[in-house]
Image 1 (cartoon, one colour):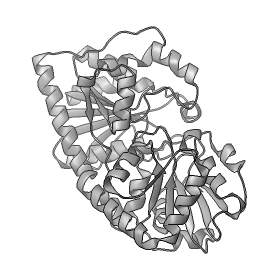
Image 2 (cartoon, helix red, strand yellow; image 1 turned 45 degrees about the horizontal axis):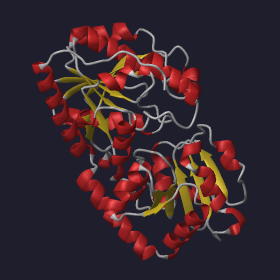
Image 3 (tube, one colour; image 1 turned 90 degrees about the vertical axis):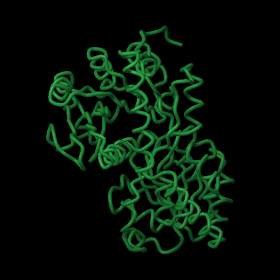
Length: 401
């Protein structure tokens, strides 16, 4: 079995959120389990190009990179224009024939190039939107036209659509996609990354934080609720505590800063050890997002010992509630945020119990080893089905709705 992952961004690209980490962790775990898998991606970094060769090996996985025509367009408008993609896929296939494709994320042209490749060679593919299927947050009209022209065929032609949570299963249902082709497999975490953590106090010392630290980590976009978290700290509502917002601006920074007052630090994008140092030093980690199908950060926080508060309608909220590993809050409920932050800061014993439950749940259910086994079984199911009924099942386009 040779599986080709298709994603517009891949390490060292961290500015685009969770998908690069997810595809990297999944492909690496599959390779450890004996599944041959490759990655086709672009040189996206942020508005700059990632300085990576066109082909490289990474943790047992062959990675093929097509340059974007403009990484500023890619970063600021999510418009990925890979050069030479068709030739790259054909050369890859000639060297080691692909059996199945796994498309990650929605509304990028790599999927359309891969779909045409799959049709030419009669290959099945699976599709993981990872929260990108709905037309929400920004440029809804553009997304509607884009779907009509380019993107609608991708989910409709997939042999299986992987939802990472019950919340995403609901999105697939509302999009009118056949429920019999949907499967739920959660995102995974690389547990080995949390075995050697930065020393406690490292982040606080670097940023001059002397008391309790409440933190948010992730992209700063309107849907993430960072502005509500900043508002919850207004007027000295949580005395002695410092709020740290770690992440790159994806359209929500100005609104968050408009709530501005003393006691809030905006760090910008954090990577590698500095990212882990923030999680280790967080006395409370808040992830108040809405309409998000998963959210890796709260689970990473738990692995670093941070008690968590998460948005109640997020996919991570489903699992946090199931595990009894944190507190839930409604999106935009500023007073509710204040109350829950005060509760966790004021009852460290209960917070530590939640963290222990969370770690146990993650180790049992969310390791990439477990998630990779589930993916490998699904790939085998799709290939067996394709042998009985050869050829992809991609549809045409439909009128915009």
